[in-house]
Amino acid sequence: MQAPATTETTEKIARLRLSAGAVYRLGVASRSVAAIVGGYVLAALVTMLLSVSLPMARSEAVMTATLLSFAIYTCVVMWVFATRSALRAWLGLLIPAAVIAAILQWMDALSWSLA
Image (cartoon, rainbow, N blue to C red; front, side, top):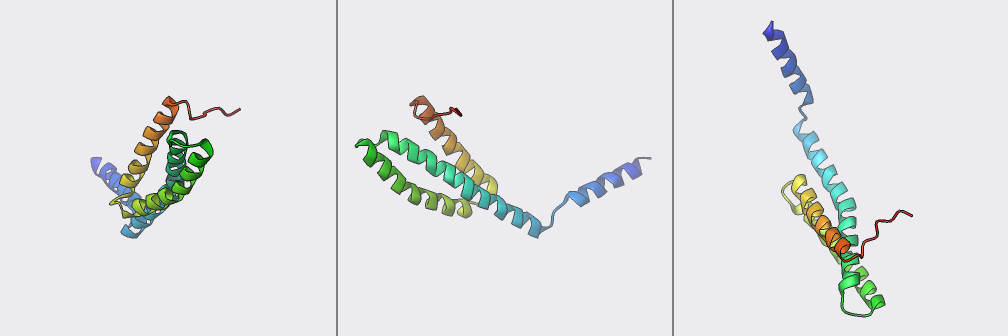
């Protein structure tokens, strides 16, 4: 009676396997989302951090940080597609974003209010 159970299990596993092309396409899609969304979030957080920490007038600090955000976003997008795997790309975005958000929260510069 165990033979049908094992063949049923192997059939389920065989159905769940993706072709190499599908895996590649999912990896590219994941990197694209990481580059677009994760890159924007990371660039925005760096811009916030630079806006409150640059030693100049507030308006000049905001303008400088905003101009630098374009270069940061471009570098993040290039880095996401240069990494070995999509997982490494996601971790490379989430870890620095979490650290910068923690620093901003510690500086009371990050507003979490929804009102």
